[in-house]
Image (cartoon, rainbow, N blue to C red; front, side, top):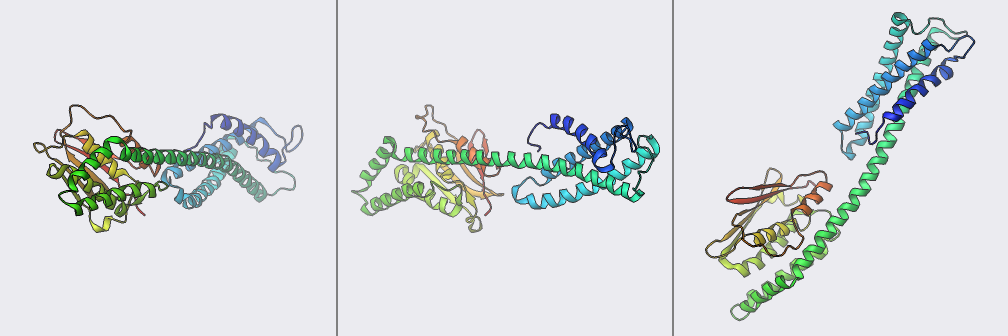
Amino acid sequence: MIGFDDRLITFIMVPVVSFIVPIVFFGRRFGRVPEFTWKVYVSTVIITTVLWVGNRFIMIWMRRKYPQFEETRKRIWMQSFIMLMFTLVSTNVLDYLLKDFCGFMDTQYFPGFSKMDIIINANSSALLCTLTVVAIYESVYFVHALRNSVEEKELLKRESLKAQLNALKTQVNPHFLFNNLNTLSSVIPDNPQQAIDFVQQLSKVYRHILEVRDEKNIPLKDELEVLKAYAFLLKTRFGDNLDINIDVAEEKLQKKVVPLSLQILMENAIKHNIVSSEKPLRIDVFAVNGTLVVSNNLQKKNQLPESTGIGLDNIRNRYKLLGNKTVVVQEDANSFTVSIPLIEN
């Protein structure tokens, strides 16, 4: 919430500000009236410390309450009002207590200064202290936030590119091409129209990968359309050994997901599980409680094929960079389930 270790700057600035304020705002000098005494300095240090620490706490509290960038304007306005009230109330209460109870501040009024002048100067100096705190902490906070934003943007770009390249690599690797060409060759003699459909769906998958290469998130409707094309390829290959059920309500289709996430999850389900007539694999895709769920019955292969580099970590990282959204993975004896957040427009 602070963005840096502020202990050193606090230990330096509180004594310095406490030294400057009596000289600038009250005309205190050494060796002449109004004299700068150790009691004046100690009292100023007390007030400055309370204001510094109190306003620092208010800023941390407000940043936790309004952490999103879109809420910055609201946070600044509310934070400024609360800090102003805290500063004025604390200054006058502490001034009264130190002057009338502790004896730290003498009651001598300065030549040419009325009581109201003293009050105005005291509050002005307190506001100066508050503005100093705000200037230091907000400057560092925004620099820190800007640096994090740039780093996260670059990381998101790398993660997206990694997913796109890995997905493309998977689609063009010899095993994938062999499986699909083998499926196509077996379909052509018996069902030419299905063979044409197969080629069209394969082309649709490739085109989608190229189209989303620069996108951080895409509408769920678009991702599901390509997922259906990918499911068509798999169903043509595995037949009744694979059951894919996609059931997402119409009102959910305009929400967004990270590109290629559903294809990756379905591919992982095929890669890690047995698909056979004795052990058919069922994959369900549905939306519930603001998430999209991809679930399959668990029947792990004894020996996994060579990894392509596509996995849950990539999806987790991209969702994290889009707002600390969590991808939930659940596994039990019978099923494996991944829930990815649906992103609001």
